[in-house]
Amino acid sequence: MSGAEAGARPLHPALQTRACALFGVELPIVQTGMGWVSGARLTAATSAAGGLGILASATMTVEELRVAIGKVKERTDKPFGVNMRGDQLDAAERIELMIREGIRVASFAGPPARQLIDKLKEAGIVTMPTVGMAKHAVKMQSWGVDAVIAQGHEGGGHTGPVPTSLLLPEVCRSVDIPVLGAGGFKDGRGLVAALAFGAEGIAMGTRFLLTQESQVPDAVKQRYLAADERSTVVTEAIDGAPQRVIQTELIQRLERSGPLSRLLRAVRNAWVFRGLTGNSVGQILREGMAMRKTRGLTLAQLTMAANAPMLTRATMVDGNLEAGILPTGQVTGIISQLPSVEEVLRSIVEEAEQTLGRLQG
Image (cartoon, rainbow, N blue to C red; front, side, top):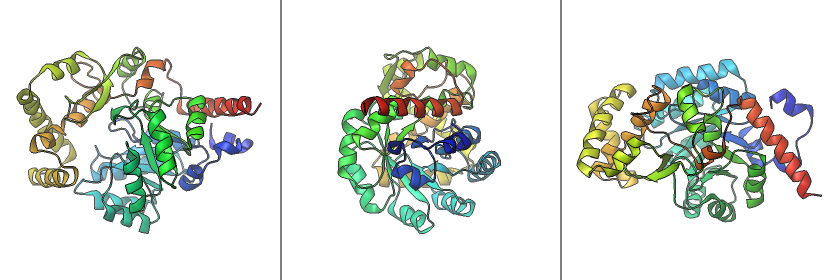
């Protein structure tokens, strides 16, 4: 649904949520910042169609982010966001860039430092971290964030242990700020369910990954479409943290391998990732120590943290299904088509309005 189409007739009042007003968008639907996936084309398409597109910047250099922001602006004048890691050494530089470019929303996969939240709020940028437990949402609200994404166990990539149906209503009861539901959403019925739980909208990754505008190679998209509801697994073998991916031979090998072989693989990936991000060895070490302090990771876990982005890049950029991983939500098992982003949003809104009408008799 394009902006023009959304403005042609009023949306159902239930779909005109606080999140829409906060983000400055027409629809309560967010496209999450997926590393190597959420580039300028996908982000712009989502925002142009009335949702909130979010650029994934954690796998970009600052200069690459500047270029990507420019490309989004060339495609749409609608608000969009940037996703980043709060523990990156150049986080302040990225925020300065976002301020200069007038970015509407800053999203974080984890909790950002309080001083970053203060800086963003001072600049008028909406701050939105993802949480996996209600107590984390309460803490983030006390630090001044504007909204949170509550991602349940069904979600893709790094994910928590609590299913969406339990997490989302608990988070909504625990905080006053807008909450977006994530994990298992793909259609209008899901949007209505999230609203019933008390959320102000939904955030989706896998559904947007499987669209025409997604830059993921076609062969990789077809592998996702071939998955069923039982094809995913949550594993800690990639980087030491629970991550939902499609079960593959590589994942099975990683889970069978011992700690030493995993660590050696991670060291290699850390070195390659250093080259891609343009960071020096000193910068990598300083960033690692910062992560160790803020996230309580061991040195081995810090080294393994490079596994996820590099193994994801192998599939999402290089199209190598044998050498990479396929982060995904369980919802991939019930997605069978590759529509355009506009078609996705239009169908979600139409089904949501039909569902609301049916419930109202």
